[in-house]
Image (cartoon, rainbow, N blue to C red; front, side):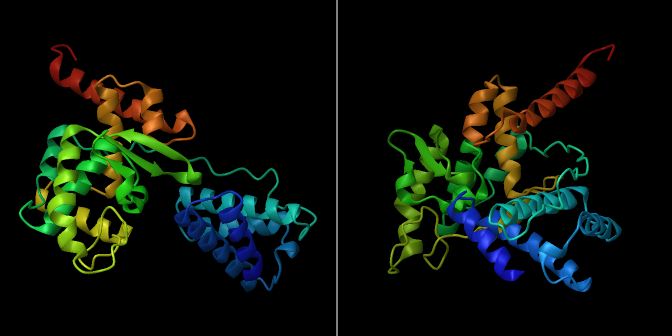
Length: 296
């Protein structure tokens, strides 16, 4: 089973060029399924029937798994079995016509413009790490890129003279995003005054943002940074690195940006993914109306 999962993950990485995080997620989900089969004395995915898959879905439900988790694992199984049929490891796909559980669409949590300002002001700009943190937060809010894209940026990806950032998103799709004047200033300050101190005498990794060891900053490292500043800001909302991406999109749409342009900047393959932010802005309009209209 592990060998088949390994070959499937290799296929996704080389042929479909999926991101590392996505590949890891597929691997975890499929190993969970492999563990379930092993408990039932099933040694090969070829032995699994439609009833086996349904039993697995019910098993996850009994465990209290979230609907989104069950839907994601079923999607991984469907892709896995399609690959096994194509490579003739199995002669039938037991996941055919199995529907994913209906997902409740949750609106993304966003910050107000004042809350964003408060968060961005938390890092100290008089030391190397604080200046780096301010530059990262400003760039994240200015571009709406994903955290994985942020930490993957190289120095050459930020063109401050022309005012843009180039990044590779999901499926290795490259896009170019404008960079505002404030973000340009902070990134420029970081490159001039902070990054050389962090890299020191280490071999320069070429990464745009580096940690105190002079190596490329990780997603986990950045998550800890955001968590610390969110606590310092004392904002009464749960704040994650993705919150700034949601806030970027929502604030653009609230101020009249075109939905297609926002889709392009976010790197969404399907505009329906971007449309969730229109629901957020409508909700905000209703709140304003309720507070301001005398007969609301």
